[in-house]
Length: 296
Image 1 (cartoon, helix red, strand yellow):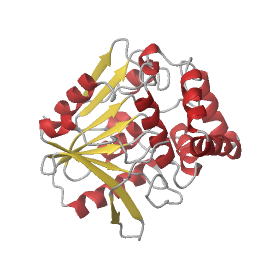
Image 2 (spheres, rainbow, N blue to C red; image 1 turned 45 degrees about the vertical axis):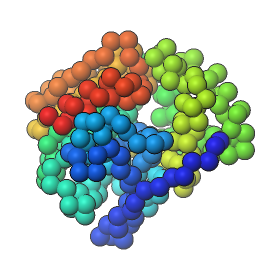
Image 3 (cartoon, helix red, strand yellow; image 1 turned 180 degrees about the horizontal axis):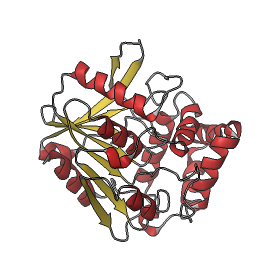
Image 4 (cartoon, rainbow, N blue to C red; image 1 turned 90 degrees about the vertical axis):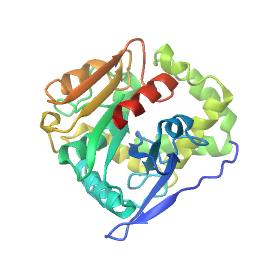
């Protein structure tokens, strides 16, 4: 894997933990806080985001506790992330902002929306997982994903070993890992497979995974357990504007599950994207439309 200099800043929270973040776009633009997927990190772009710059948007991407360069937070919950965000916003002097969570990060965006944090104007759940019924992922979810959730809950040591093997392969045999990404994605729709074709795309994927697991895979496994448990709030109780962008062909976070989950959210704007899969933010048109929607 080619060497890329990873930069960013950290905030020190009241309990002494470090919270890492990176900024993109227009420094004095409208703030949108980015919440990564599971696994993920504050690294969203190899360079900057020209679309955010053009739209006058300041993107601030955080590492959740235990990911990337953020300190772990034992016993954390979805709602405790809202507490961290409220503190981070105060530290950064931000008065008005929106939040955007992708995939597993969608649940954390929903938590901030539910809490109606001071200054929050809107939230977006993008290709987001939905709350599980009776602790089980929907049958329409891809089998590899359902297995990962089951192992995280019932055999976390084995799931940690799987992720550790991926990390080792990235570090020692990156070309082999690239081939495994391309050969092991047959369960994904064509939309998602198309974003794992070029060497640049594969390098970017490895960079994201490696930084996400800088401290090891324990937090990824823990988050998958959190996703399957009750979230601690009901989506229907969210009052601020909630924007939901979801691909109709998404098999990692099934379309029908999230559509049903947000059906009773009073101020929900649901955007169904025909033929699209899970990788929505990689599409320039969708990404621009999403940023524009949150800035309104």
